[in-house]
Image (cartoon, rainbow, N blue to C red):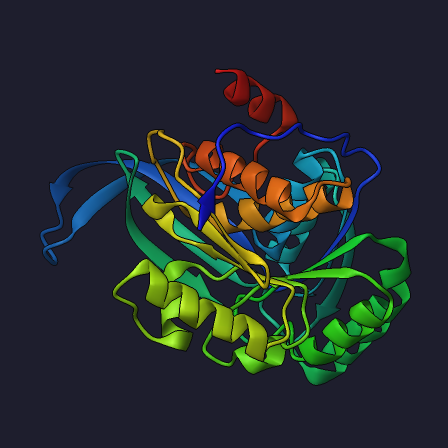
Length: 318
């Protein structure tokens, strides 16, 4: 296993074209002060003082790609409701091209987080699955969009928006496109033929079982990569960094020393950075190094956040 040292050159990303497809959600944050315990139950009382909204899921991937200077588009299914309108406004502000199919019977997924003194106290989820007819229309649009983009990102959050993922992979690969997937669940057979998967440590363990050494991890990861006919498998490993498995070897990237404030959305930043760098001409090993660098920056921010090229250059110099 080889490890890298210095960071590669950050390419010009302005011509990069990235299409993100997958499950979107609206992340809502309620911030407040906690000064007492409820007399009704042994839980803290939060006096909410402000709130924030941010795009989540595949929408966060798309905004991360846009923040890195790429031409970013998002294809997804949302409800015909107020959270969908809020999501659309936020994506407009982030410069993301939207291809949102509205389903009147769908409630746009919301993740509501309640924080007191910068600590998350509670998360409440609102969600249901989209209708097959809307998914079929989205697939038709996907077919028409593929030719206009360099890299396709399929962001699977298990909410039902990627019911046709096998067909999506086949169409993109037939068109010669690089297909990156952020996977979910334990049925990885549906991702067969993609260019690269980016499971985190826990997600990989769910599929291949646990390991007791780096050698065992490599055997299991390489077996999965070969079985699924992937070009590569990138395992993000939290405080252990990330490891790239390819047929010709393994490259490990250690975690950059930094204060870890919030890891939510870090995987979105990783796959978005990978997509933008590959679409900008970086080789895979360089793109992985830059993605690890971006992840080290974003975990120091609260909630689902983005990283800019200026931040990457500044941190690189620092």
